[in-house]
Image 1 (cartoon, rainbow over the protein chains, first blue to last red):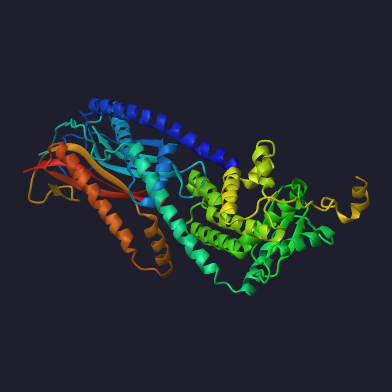
Image 2: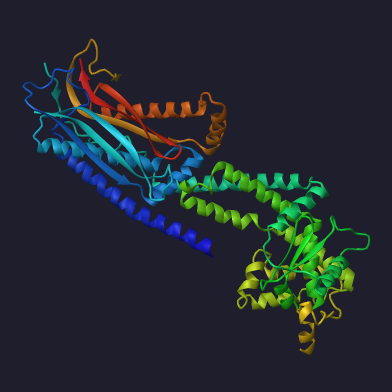
Length: 152
Length: 294
Length: 104
C-alpha cells in the first residue's frame, strides 16, 4: 500500500513537472527570442584586444550576467533513465540552451544600460548546484555565468 | 582597421543546440528500454541463481537455514503438545518411503497473523493465528502439505538464491541504494519487493499439486481440504490480514478450480468424512484447564 | 569553415563579426559501460569508453557551433573555447563557443 502511494506520488510530481515545466520552457524561449532581437545591436565577442577594435576606448567595465535555472521533476527522472540507457540527454539540452542564452542576455542588457559600445573577451561558465535531495551528484539546478569586458 | 560588427539574427526556426524530439516520446522510449532490459536481466539472473542454489549440499543448506532462522525475532512457543501434533501431521504428509530432504523442525510462532511458511534447512513456521482460522484437520494438513511441497521442490532455497543475486546486482549497480536516484530508488525497491519475496506461479501450482496428492493419499479423499480457500474467497474483504498473505498465491477461485480439475483427472476421490481438529488446538499447555471448560 | 582558438586567422583578414556562437551537447554512457569503468577504476589506466564518449560529444558540440555560425552567414569561428560540466550524474556536457566572423 505504502509503496503504491510512493509510486503514485512520484508519478504525480512527474506530471506536474512536465505540465508546468514545458509551459514555462515554451514561454522562456519566446521571451529569449524577443529580447535577443532587442539587444542584437550590441557587439559581443569572445576575442580580446589582440584585434584592432573600435577607436577611442575611454572606459572599461567588468560585466557579468548570471542565471540559475532549476531542473523539473520530469526532466530529472528522464535523465536518470537516460543514464541507464546511454546516449544524448535530450531533456537537458533545452535547459542548458535556455540558461546560456539567458545569461548572455542579462550580460548584454547590463552592458546596454551602461551604454557599452562593445563587450569583449566574453567567457561562459556552467556549474551544477546540489539538489534538494542532498545527494552529492544530484543537480537540483544549474547556474550559468557569462562575463566579459564592456568598453565605451 | 577595426572589425565591423554586423548584427545578425538567426531567423531559422531550428535551434542547433536542442535535439528535436518530443520529451514524452523520449521518455516512453527510455522507460520501455529500461523495463525490458531489467526484466531480461532479472529473469536471467534469477534462473542462474535458482540453478546454482540447487547444487548446495544439504549440510550447507541446513547451515544457511539456521542462520536465516536466527534472524526471526517473533516469539516462539516451545514445549507445547500442539507442536508434537503438527509435527506428526506434517510427517504424515510424506508418502511411504519418502524422506524429507532435510529433517523438518516445527516452530510454533505466537502471532495473530494468519500465515505458514517454510524456510531453507527445513524450518517450518506456523503462526497461532493460522490455527485459529482453520476449521478442520484436512484444511490444516493441506496447508502443511503445500509448504512441504515447496520444500521438497527446493523452492525456498531457489527464492533465496534469486533474491540474493538480484539484490547484490542492484547494490553493485547502485540502483535502489543511492540517495541520488531519488524517485527511481523507490520504484526499484518496490518492484524488487514484489518479485523477489514470493514464489513463482508455477512453484505455487506444483506445491498445490503435491499437497492435494498427499492429502488424498493420507485421508483417502480430498474433501474439506480446500474449504479454507473457499472461506478466504468469501471473507477476502472482511479479513484484510488474511487476504494480504494470500495475495501472493494464485487467486483463490482459480486455485480451487484448478485443483478440482486435477482431482478429476487423477481419479482422486473428493468425497469423504471430515477429520476434526483436536479441541485443544488453540490452547497453550498451561491454559489447558481453562480451555477444556469451554 | 575555419575554426581556430586564436583571436585571428593567420594570413587572413577578419572583416566582419557576428557575435557569439555556441554549440553544446550532453551525453550519458549506458550503465554497462559505467560498471566496466568502475572495475577499471580499481586498476587505473585509460577509460577507453569514456574517452570515446567525450570525443563524440566534443565533435557534436563543435558541429553544432559550426551550424550556428553558418546560420549567421559566417565563414570562420575564432577564439574557440571548450568547457565541460557535469550537470547530471554520469553524464557529461561538452560546450564549445567562439565568435563568428567573416574572413577574406
